[in-house]
Image 1: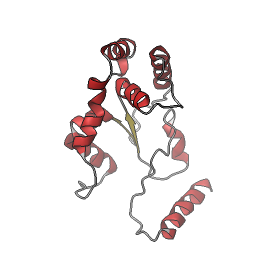
Image 2: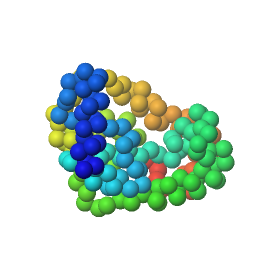
Image 3: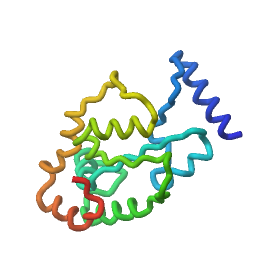
Amino acid sequence: STKKLIENKILLNIKKTKKNILPNIILDQAVNFFNPGTVFKYFDNLKIIIVTRDPRSVYYSLKSRDSKKYPWRNIETFTKWYKIMMNSRQRKKNNHNILNIKFESFAKSFSKEAIKINKFLDIKDLKNYSFNHKTTYYNAYKAKKLLSTNERKYIEKKLQKYLQW
């Protein structure tokens, strides 16, 4: 079956790297953002964490990296694109295996959000992680300072429904 093939491939790769097999395997960006539920047919006991960002932060990130793949050069096009992308998401209500996290909330209230994530994943508090929440907080909110007033206001007007800060 496809489930068994994927599981064997993952376990084989772990074995090749000579790492200890942990009870949990994390796959980064392994689901379809628009329809994450499709992946449940390939894994047992799957938990998905969907992270969204404030559109002002997304716009700033694309702009600062001079992204070639996403529209940011024209703010009107960006806001239309962002709205289409977010409205295209299929959200199943009451799916206890999908947790939605707002990146800015995570950065602002790291301890509170970490507890929520730990509970969702049914794990104890992780003490040994390499994560600097102060840097993440700065990155999450730098669009506040670095976007022009006109850019911020335009996005706020057009994408009010999606604002996270």
